[in-house]
Image 1 (cartoon, rainbow, N blue to C red):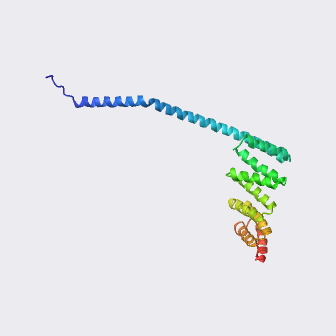
Image 2 (cartoon, helix red, strand yellow):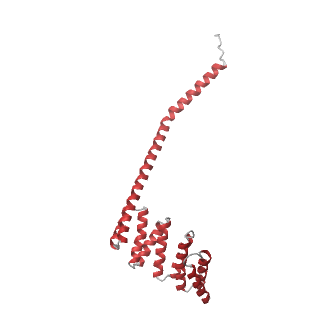
Image 3 (tube, one colour):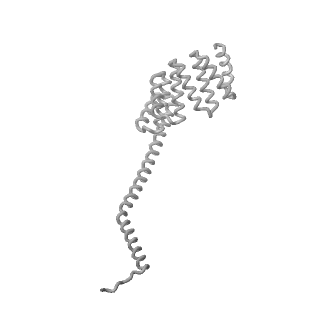
Length: 226
């Protein structure tokens, strides 16, 4: 029989270490490509996001410039030219803030031309598809309320003015102005209880605004009808 060789604890520990190292090396070799591919994919995604972001910024900038040009024509009184430019902006830069604003401004142009149905269509298009910008939301809602007032839908117009006022509570003068517009419509509609209620709101919540004194007079008038 051959002579047995006793393996020492140190040799055994050394062999286990070699085996573990070999397994680790094998794992890295087997998965390295996957890791590299994963890293490459991340880099590609980052590059794409960067390109898209830059493209979106460029598009928004171009839309803003087109909006400024169209608005300059509008302010100069060239309504037909401004209308064409706003429509072109919407076609060229859909989804941009400039296009959303152009939709509202088209409503304003139609209102100025007393084409109330078209004006209402533009304001509703903005509110149905693009609402979310506080400034534009207010512009579209106020435009819609103005159209409804011209169409003698006074109760509906008053409700919108009250809604705008509720969202402008941090702007006392603006909020009181919208409530005063609501009172104007409620008064014509003969809704005296609502006139009294809204007038009292102005007196209680916005006493330091220019519409407080007028609200006191309308409150007295409303109470005489109740």
